[in-house]
Length: 82
Length: 151
Image (cartoon, each protein chain N blue to C red):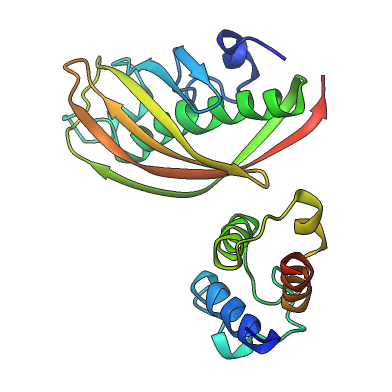
């Protein structure tokens, strides 16, 4: 799986949690999950749990704090699967 | 850390919006508690006019207070190994189905099973029974738990 494959998978995980007024097209690596994509903290937990299942990794509380943007999340995934 | 019997004292609710009388059992995986819907509760005056029935939102609230908030405080204190004076739990989702009405004067029992507690989010599968042991309502409720200050 390439990094782009993982990015596409991450986008697919995030998509169902977007509020109705945020389009899936607006997801970029720079998008801030809470401030720009308007994902609430409860749904952010669901995204993390889905990421754990999809990539077979385990995230800690500190990882969650570091995960501000989509790019942060992707970097987190990259570092965990190595 | 307090005993689960003491959890009620940590709840941030009071009459007329406290919907827990007693916790029957509690461990890290779930809990069970009861509440009596007294016939003098204020919402019966308007729900419905001349025909009091417990509103579904109140049944959901009762399920959430027993199954999510009481359990959440217990799990938080157990995992942090200390007592918190001020615990806030924000309801983040509820998906309930209702089967049987609850009338004034009925006592209900709420049973909650933890689905997960991760990153401050607690999600539970919750069922409410009436005194005949029939399922009143059931569903999944989730919330975010925050401890505001130490005891």
